Length: 218
Image (tube, rainbow, N blue to C red):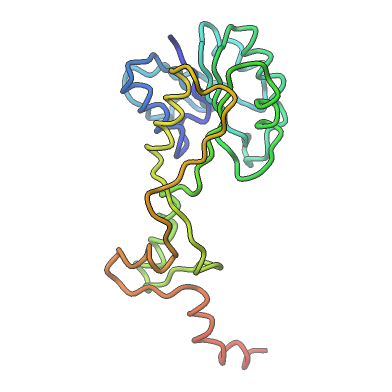
């Protein structure tokens, strides 16, 4: 069984690749730049671009499972090529398809849901890797800039997202389902930054502390 993972060099795509390898599957990874992929040994890295469906035809040869993303191209615009890609997949004999939810309705996900393949939508609440964006601010001044500091979110590790996708691509019983994936606990920004052991101010707090400065400038 060969499974093609698109977006294979992304935050979640790498984890899908890893989880499939752990299951003993043969993995083919699609990327626009194979020379920079840096994927594990044993992965068949191939060139292709989701904005150009014809470029996927060789990569789909002998593939039984396909993992898709909803954004692509240089500027990560919503992909409009879903129907063409799925037609190629069906012609190649693909049986199972997973798609990583893009945070809202997208043409690619709509095409997947409308297909006659055994599709599964993987819907993570929030990537744990997003917290890495806070690192520079915490290092430089203990500041985390977030607009909605009281919002609860159950962050989920990308490896868990990859595990769900890998199961859907290799097991029966997941077709026609959308899986909402959450972490073990819903936390606020303050809860999350507390684990750093350093006091962190949110952007809202920082703005309040400097309100006089802004008013004077106005």
